[in-house]
Image (tube, rainbow, N blue to C red; front, top):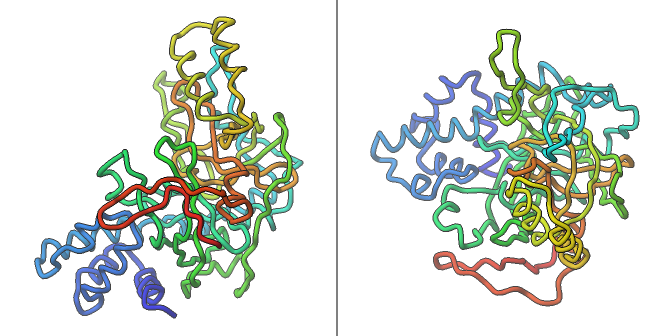
Length: 396
């Protein structure tokens, strides 16, 4: 067992946040180097990771950040898995209904659930999904014993320094949790990303399992890691479903209560949540931006504007997909499965103007897995003294 995994197992063994915080703030239980190691598994900025812990204020503040970024999410996930195992809902085929498109063209969420008879077996779908153990959440999927997610999920506060530079995410370590409660230490090893977000995918290798984290009521460890497969062909209108992390409340969607006040809709379960919808088709960044420009004018598009959209060919640049599965903040990197259980893409964002969900297409997933490498490398962007290739061409 590595030192990092040992420290995580030790931290997660504390029964409450107060006891965990007291231990973190005590040099007897966690030395300065231990706190530094744990902080590197979070999005905490390097200025805090490398702070002078000889100052009591710095040590205490860093300990609180580690508690918020690692221990608190751990308790949230484990508590929900133990109390209301979301896999049961998937097996019972209970899921959130698709987004509804209004007459004005806006895709809105609904808190209605339904029994969806066509959901496939969870073995190569639900069981392959992971959530990232961090306050900002995030989701991923296991393919060929690798974790694939959106690049922006492997985030850091340092990335906010300059929006014009693609961050160096290679080598960052993160903790992921499966729906059966098992947790693993992972490391980012390949990234395909650009500034405008049309390319946004990362691959992480699984280093080791963190001992003592399995939910034994759901399985008897050890268990092999389930793996999803990429979909070969998907046509617009194909039924799809998404498994992701809504963190319970959708702040963009409200309903009017009997008292006449708007209330936020709560989605259950708050983790490993299944929603259904349709694959709406491929798009490119150019088409997406053009549609947004037309929609923002508050009127129906003219014939000329429609032709401009039609003339844009998504075939060459169509690395983005659109879908109608309900998703929210914690769904970044969540797999979009077709009705046969194949992955057609990863959810990455939604349009603020019309609410349509979009994601990373399967072509980019094949590329990040090493199946279809590019022939030419793109230019490098500097960040500090390191260099990060916008498209990393190293072999898997």
